[in-house]
Length: 79
Image 1 (cartoon, rainbow, N blue to C red):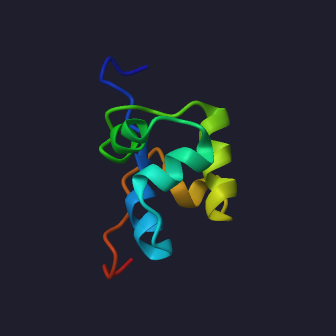
Image 2 (image 1 turned 30 degrees about the horizontal axis):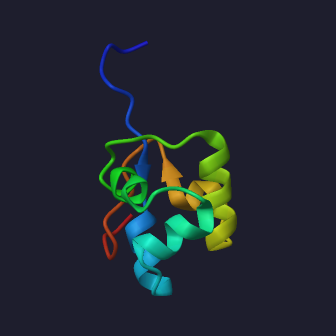
């Protein structure tokens, strides 16, 4: 296992923007502090499995749409 910090990438900000949901609204729906959403979005904090699954359920998408172990491709980029 690598000594580097394990990164978890996410699309929380994109999903929030698409749905017009503020950090505070998302935090309230998930039962966490709104600053936690900011930490998650910036990659400063990795969610628990329980929180990741609740967030995917909130957005009504598979958890892999919200979180990934590899960086997401930039929107509009060729695959």
